[in-house]
Length: 124
Image 1: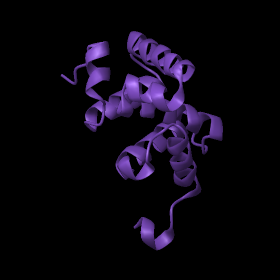
Image 2: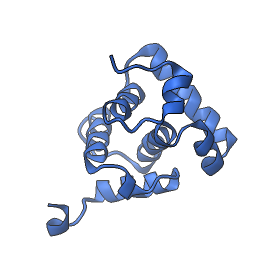
Image 3: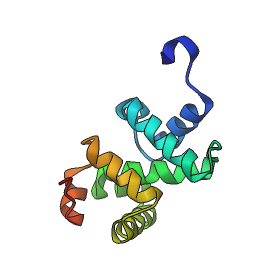
Image 4: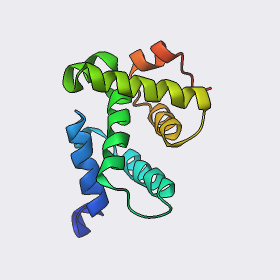
Protein backbone atom coordinates (compact mmCIF):
# COMPACT_ATOMS: atom_id res chain seq x y z
CA UNK A 1 0.00 0.00 0.00
CA UNK A 2 2.79 2.47 0.89
CA UNK A 3 4.46 1.83 -2.46
CA UNK A 4 1.38 2.87 -4.44
CA UNK A 5 0.62 6.18 -2.76
CA UNK A 6 3.97 6.97 -1.16
CA UNK A 7 4.55 7.53 2.52
CA UNK A 8 2.55 10.19 4.31
CA UNK A 9 4.22 13.37 5.49
CA UNK A 10 3.74 12.26 9.09
CA UNK A 11 5.38 8.91 8.39
CA UNK A 12 8.28 10.61 6.63
CA UNK A 13 8.71 12.97 9.59
CA UNK A 14 8.66 10.07 12.03
CA UNK A 15 11.24 8.22 9.92
CA UNK A 16 13.52 11.27 10.06
CA UNK A 17 13.04 11.53 13.83
CA UNK A 18 13.81 7.82 14.28
CA UNK A 19 16.95 8.18 12.19
CA UNK A 20 18.04 11.19 14.27
CA UNK A 21 17.55 9.13 17.44
CA UNK A 22 19.81 6.36 16.13
CA UNK A 23 17.33 3.90 14.67
CA UNK A 24 17.11 2.67 11.11
CA UNK A 25 13.50 3.38 10.12
CA UNK A 26 13.34 0.15 8.10
CA UNK A 27 14.17 -1.72 11.30
CA UNK A 28 11.00 -0.46 12.97
CA UNK A 29 7.86 -2.23 11.73
CA UNK A 30 5.30 -0.01 10.01
CA UNK A 31 2.66 -1.19 12.49
CA UNK A 32 4.73 0.27 15.34
CA UNK A 33 5.24 3.52 13.46
CA UNK A 34 1.55 3.81 12.59
CA UNK A 35 0.56 3.14 16.20
CA UNK A 36 3.09 5.73 17.38
CA UNK A 37 1.61 8.29 14.99
CA UNK A 38 -1.89 7.44 16.19
CA UNK A 39 -0.83 7.93 19.80
CA UNK A 40 0.84 11.24 18.94
CA UNK A 41 -2.28 12.44 17.13
CA UNK A 42 -4.52 11.46 20.04
CA UNK A 43 -2.30 13.46 22.36
CA UNK A 44 -2.54 16.40 19.95
CA UNK A 45 -6.35 16.36 19.69
CA UNK A 46 -6.39 14.62 16.30
CA UNK A 47 -3.94 16.94 14.60
CA UNK A 48 -0.61 15.93 13.13
CA UNK A 49 2.14 16.14 15.71
CA UNK A 50 4.88 18.75 15.39
CA UNK A 51 8.54 17.90 14.82
CA UNK A 52 9.36 18.28 18.52
CA UNK A 53 6.71 15.75 19.58
CA UNK A 54 7.92 13.32 16.92
CA UNK A 55 11.53 13.73 18.06
CA UNK A 56 10.61 13.04 21.69
CA UNK A 57 8.60 9.95 20.78
CA UNK A 58 11.40 8.69 18.53
CA UNK A 59 13.94 9.23 21.30
CA UNK A 60 11.97 7.11 23.77
CA UNK A 61 11.39 4.41 21.16
CA UNK A 62 15.10 4.41 20.35
CA UNK A 63 16.01 4.03 24.02
CA UNK A 64 13.62 1.09 24.39
CA UNK A 65 14.81 -0.62 21.19
CA UNK A 66 18.54 0.05 21.42
CA UNK A 67 18.94 -0.40 25.16
CA UNK A 68 20.74 1.96 27.55
CA UNK A 69 24.31 1.26 26.44
CA UNK A 70 23.81 1.56 22.68
CA UNK A 71 21.48 4.54 23.09
CA UNK A 72 24.14 6.42 25.06
CA UNK A 73 26.79 5.58 22.45
CA UNK A 74 24.64 7.00 19.68
CA UNK A 75 22.94 9.89 21.49
CA UNK A 76 25.23 10.83 24.38
CA UNK A 77 24.93 10.65 28.13
CA UNK A 78 22.62 13.66 28.51
CA UNK A 79 19.99 12.28 26.16
CA UNK A 80 20.39 8.89 27.83
CA UNK A 81 19.64 10.41 31.23
CA UNK A 82 16.66 12.28 29.83
CA UNK A 83 15.24 9.09 28.28
CA UNK A 84 15.78 7.16 31.51
CA UNK A 85 14.02 9.86 33.52
CA UNK A 86 11.07 9.81 31.12
CA UNK A 87 10.91 6.03 31.24
CA UNK A 88 11.01 5.95 35.05
CA UNK A 89 8.31 8.64 35.31
CA UNK A 90 6.09 6.85 32.81
CA UNK A 91 6.42 3.60 34.73
CA UNK A 92 5.72 5.34 38.03
CA UNK A 93 2.51 6.95 36.78
CA UNK A 94 1.44 4.14 34.47
CA UNK A 95 -0.32 6.41 32.01
CA UNK A 96 0.41 9.02 29.37
CA UNK A 97 2.02 8.96 25.97
CA UNK A 98 5.40 7.74 27.21
CA UNK A 99 3.80 4.83 29.08
CA UNK A 100 1.85 3.86 25.96
CA UNK A 101 4.99 3.98 23.81
CA UNK A 102 6.88 1.77 26.28
CA UNK A 103 3.96 -0.65 26.29
CA UNK A 104 3.98 -0.62 22.48
CA UNK A 105 7.63 -1.68 22.39
CA UNK A 106 6.89 -4.43 24.90
CA UNK A 107 3.86 -5.83 23.10
CA UNK A 108 5.62 -5.70 19.74
CA UNK A 109 8.51 -7.61 21.34
CA UNK A 110 11.01 -4.98 20.24
CA UNK A 111 12.07 -3.77 23.66
CA UNK A 112 15.71 -4.41 24.49
CA UNK A 113 16.29 -7.09 27.16
CA UNK A 114 18.51 -4.69 29.14
CA UNK A 115 15.59 -2.24 29.47
CA UNK A 116 13.29 -5.05 30.60
CA UNK A 117 15.83 -6.17 33.19
CA UNK A 118 16.80 -2.68 34.41
CA UNK A 119 13.20 -1.66 35.03
CA UNK A 120 11.77 -5.06 35.96
CA UNK A 121 9.24 -4.97 33.15
CA UNK A 122 6.83 -7.76 32.44
CA UNK A 123 4.10 -8.09 29.85
CA UNK A 124 1.99 -10.30 32.12
